[in-house]
Image (cartoon, rainbow, N blue to C red):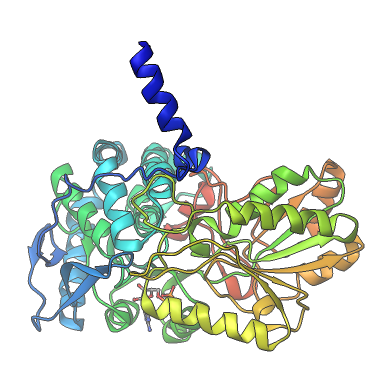
Length: 499
Ligand code: ADP
């Protein structure tokens, strides 16, 4: 460095207004969306082509961080669903169920490869449409979605080995309805095992996040998958209900709220349709005194705050053993103070936008309820953008089992904290909700982990980690969190008849 440059450098470093450490950490690092090409309007993907909705209705999908309209999307009617089911039935009878399994596998592999090729585009659209931080969609949602297609492509021609001596057979047409929290990943969880098992599909994405499913339809077109094997019908609850109630559907796979799950179960009772439900949750994250506390605090933050708490398995209840409670809460507050809430497209962002104004309203109502119940609120002193739907990460301290913020699913970055003394006490408290989807245990003792996993009523129990997913491991719940498993060998079962 020359003397002149050195002097200039020193002057810059001495700039009194510049907080150098913050500037280094928080300089925005936005992902570009310049390469994204969205159509103004999306039709329905039925029988391998784009079809206008029968009643001509379209709804807007917006970017929840900017409130800007991204595109208009077709509102599928009962008539449209009927068209899609007819296409799926014809494709099932004439093509897909007759095709050798190794040929089916090739198409599924091709879809996986095409998702990988367009991963960046998908990640950006996922964050624009859903509000989740680009880091999450880039590193988790999109790679996992591709991996699900890869994983199930591998099973397509090995079903007899998966279920030896059971003569596995496809079941027909699957109706699949998915929510807005993991739009592409949920589509992959549903479509990949259905196709591998030899079924055809009518899938409805959530009305607030339809874009990546429609982009997936473009990939399906490009992959040369025979027409009608996968049909994507957009719309809201009425479109979903038309799928559920269609008489020529053999299986319904639903992920969403417990209320709608119950409606669906009632609607198909006695019809002979197969059903899997992946519903709400109120997961307990349990920290024992012997845990690695910093690691545990990071896991708690990951479990509830990253991704805005928009995860059905979000660790929304924290149980801390009394001896370390003060320490853990202090560390948690310190960590929360460093979380960045804001632009989902910024690679530094930890907490993006809440998915919709309705969801933000619901979260804010719960914040009031928690205060009225006597909970002590902590929110870090962070800034949030003035436009868009955002919520600060929130702790509720001094809560008890009867509080609604402890019992009910909020689906936002809100963590209810309680303490415990004994293993028996925490098991009782952790199991004391109507749900049973997931839980987390933080301890140094392997024996404690095994004890907890057998006693916690949860489909998944993570130990010394949280929110880890892999296509080969099954996921699903107990009680009001639903039934049936997705992922792994278990994820094939709902799409097969075994004899
Ligand atoms: P969330 O609270 O996560 O939005 P919902 O259960 O309302 O969960 O929505 C999940 C999915 O179910 C969405 O695709 C939605 O359009 C669909 N849906 C909503 N109501 C019904 C219904 N009565 N029948 C079938 N699907 C529905």
